[in-house]
Image (tube, rainbow, N blue to C red):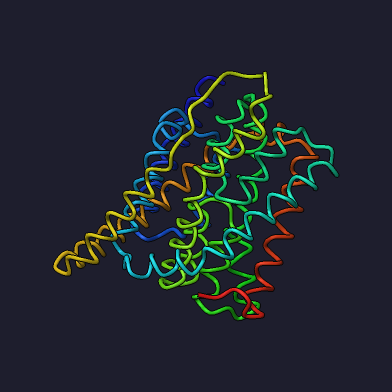
Length: 322
């Protein structure tokens, strides 16, 4: 029995390392990497769980920042400027609908807010920032993150298929994924499957949207969190990776001689991102799934479907475009 258990651990470690290597040498797509991670988490268990949990945030920030080395800052600026109006409208509508749905499904108030801002802005980063602002309790944050994580996982597989079904151009798909998918990592993962231009548009749209984390967190803290007596105080987590993304994009935009190096860094960042998606999937647990309340996940799915469908319809009608 002991020998069998020890052999299983050795096999798990061997397979885990093999998949990590394959993720870095172009053998795995983003969706395959995430699915492999989920398989490990649910059936074999991640043999390096402490290591992956420790390094996932850093690798994610590095990979996203590194993607800036393959971007043109002019395009980043144009996308951010053109998207201000529908970004404000989209965030406002999403927050309003999310809170209404939270009341309808009778979700816990703080959890409802966290799921809402995660959908409205940028998933886990927004949840972490707002959770600190309103002093949310650990289980409330856990449920919100698990809900958003599950929807992010689904988006990696569903969005590209829907995009092909409606014959979206790379620009349209990048815009849609940047507006309708929660986390930057999942936006990049989905857009990466659709094409290079889609990846460029999706990433810039999402990063421009993520810039709203700080002002939204401050506003919510003033009007929501001031009467929250529960949980400990926290510090709002600022998304510094956005600044590094912009710096990398500025360097390769203004110094043409470094563009070749920039594309190499961009390529490396894409591979690191796929490895990170594998780490993210492997961090899931059966306990996480059990902790996702039915009301919160119903709220999250409903809001996600409503906003995703509305955004797609607006893009197809030409109401939202770059």
